[in-house]
Length: 158
Length: 158
Length: 86
Length: 86
Image (tube, rainbow over all chains, first blue to last red; front, side, top):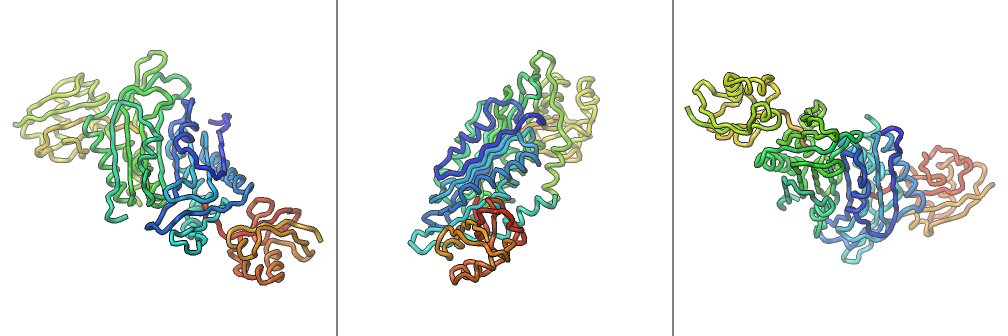
């Protein structure tokens, strides 16, 4: 789709978002999109011990960094549109934390685009998770995982 | 999640489906799902020449084959839930043809699960697309692509 | 000889001119490939539909099989081109 | 000497005890790594927060940089642990 600008929407917000509405918005009124892949990241509770996750973020840089990652994905995979939304603040188990939607004329590009954005967002977007426990115990900061660095680095070897 | 059966929903239908509702259904009321990946395949019009795609299918086998593919994905990637819906009949440009939703505790499994299902569905589920043209010209059957076989075969090399 | 139901899809169906047949299976027809070659001898429509044998896909009782698969007790045999769904 | 704004996040912020500082930058502090070592000499809170220098991430004016990046004209410098969003 050279010559037609891809649509890019990035938001960093405390409010819950409407996954469904965001997905339909990205492809609404267009006939040139063949594939839409969405990723929803939810607050997961391991065995009922988590009261909530608290997400701290770096205002300004969080949005700027996600925007840089998405723009790179659009260029690299020739995407037709991307929406990325990341929440901050207290998030209860089962609630959504992040949404990435990638649209393309072809399915592999849409899968790769969404996966690329998530891998770089995990390791590069300035957010930090702290656990609040049901038993009122002092919250721990979630540790970064080596597996997340590895997931990001596989894109550099391609 | 060994010991807890994964949920599997497969439907083959003429009616439009509600992508949004299907995605939320799969994770509703659960706190153990960390990642949900959805793939929507839409009827794409290359330059305004397509009036509609007509999808022929093999009743019975279409659902059975999709179910086999999804069950294999659940086993291989330890998915917590899968929804797969495929339409048949006449489908207008911009309208949805197929939806695959995969839920897992981890993001890579959800991405791989949805991508695996789509790659095998493309090459193994008994559906055939015929083009109806705006100019009324005789419709052509869409040809299978070698690239789709290659996409499927990469899962066998892993 | 025993009877099997054949079903056709997409351009295989269009070229044969109908969506299904019920045929008697000669003893010499042991595999999916044998069946395709047998059908090609039954008339021009079959010969045209099944001309390129290697692209024809076969399912026995709604499961994909290779051309060298023995027909065994299969009751419904489907012949169709490579699939293009999704 | 010139003035820069420092901002901290997550456990770096908690250990230093506040979210931001404004400090005078000595001429000898040329890079992100120099700054981290300089701060560690300013008190126990900084020393504790920045103990393991190699895990500390740095951003100049809201862009990630390596520890050997020259500070140049950066006005806002952020120090934080590895990120855990998504």
